Length: 337
Ligand code: NAI
Image 1 (cartoon, protein in one colour):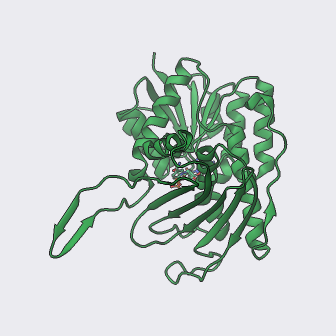
Image 2 (tube, helix red, strand yellow):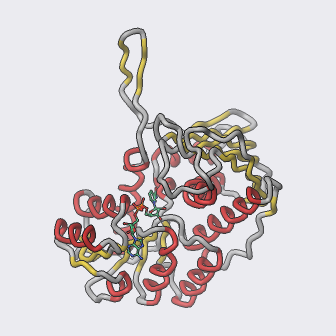
Image 3 (tube, rainbow, N blue to C red):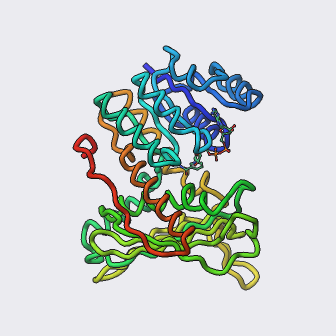
């Protein structure tokens, strides 16, 4: 039996995931879709033979939908995750889990009251072969004890709606999640340093680039450059410095062309291509586990909560002029261990 999936939100990644479920992921079928832009929603529904719902909650409560994928704008995530838990359905929510910590707390409470982990957050870098190998290298002790991480997240360009706050809450949140997973550590403090403003991304309300600085319980210091307008491609870098050596995230492989006294390798333009393998592995794993009622191993609602709290604190640091702040979280409930 194929897992009957309902997708709420059919923007860039929503349509990408629908296509992925249709063409690539085995054991599932998208049976229902919802989108506030009804023209787009109806078109996608027709293309994939799914039923269109104008109302996302109606889709979630429909008996034909067994599991839900939430790919709307960030502020609508929490509402649909809570509705899915209420309906007792597995829900995969694209990052971030919610924009405010209070909404994440409602999700944590609802999931624990339900009694089983049914929420997964779309932090797909945990499935990326490069990050997986980097984690293994660290765990095998090849570089000794990690001391420092230098990371960078460069988008080719940004949407007109991008703000300084979103730069951390929407882009930086990937780094916040993947680095605590990579190091198997937790953050204790953070701050944001603002370099000179890029002329390319100059726009009122957008400070770009920003540098997030984090310190972990084990004393590892992390710096992450977040740039919204590299102009040359989507570039994700991560280098871990240990006391015995360093380990670096590999760039995606690309043919090297040599002509006219130059050596050229392409750089991916965006997340769709850079992390395609990670999305494919992540979604196949999610479908298989949901179908077989196996425990989910991707980022949990707790991980989504940690990422949300951390990004909100870093946002406050920036607004308050770059002072360092402690990152304090309640004790992790046993349910999430
Ligand atoms: P987008 O702006 O292209 O699409 C969002 C869509 O949601 C729009 O079509 C909008 O009309 C729809 N929508 C908004 N509120 C809705 C509601 N209440 N019900 C139904 N539809 C609603 O944005 P994009 O790039 O597709 O991102 C969507 C989400 O996925 C964001 O939260 C983003 O953070 C996340 N994302 C994750 C990525 C990853 O690497 N894991 C990559 C890109 C996006």
